[in-house]
Length: 280
Image 1 (cartoon, rainbow, N blue to C red):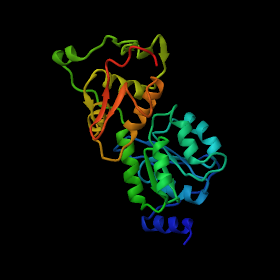
Image 2 (image 1 turned 135 degrees about the vertical axis):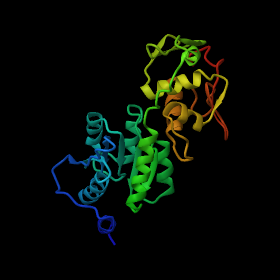
Image 3 (image 1 turned 120 degrees about the vertical axis):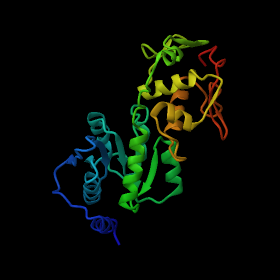
């Protein structure tokens, strides 16, 4: 059975109402007035039938899907649309999905999910190493696909501000903190290392601040996700690991033997307060 036929049978089983096929980019919308939330996904898929079927199913669950058929044009669409999640096929014209994932990661913090027909352990591992949050097969049942996407969307929500009182406010540091040549200014959200301005995304700055304000303490993934996003670690989410890798690169830490943001095996990450005396 071909992939397109298989996708049709899955769609029929779930009573997916197909919508007319429009010219690029395809935009299929559904809105839930109770939730008053519309999540946006850019789906990079070169098979029009597969793109249409999956988009139609997701649209029934309040996900606005924009389908782009070419890998070499996808980055422009993603940066223009600013979606909540990016869904990538691997085999794409112009640029393959793994390369696209790798190129996106330094500039975009949202979840990236690969959806592919390639059932390969090596591709699965490589995609995660390149910054993907998940790797799913196109044979995944639609309901499971939806559940996985919703999980990543929930995990990417900003943490809800806690109700504060005078005691809590006294515990929140607002002044810049310094570790050797490293300076972190939370008011202006600036980071300098040996007088070099380090450009960080909002999410990466928040992660660095969380680690630095707990310097010398081991922070596990669950604590980091709870403090930064208000969600629990599900055992599979790699977003913290990917962000740590980005921080290490920008802060001149070693990728193979990190000494500034250390990995404590089976426990978590540790910000080393005395490892910033030089810029290398």
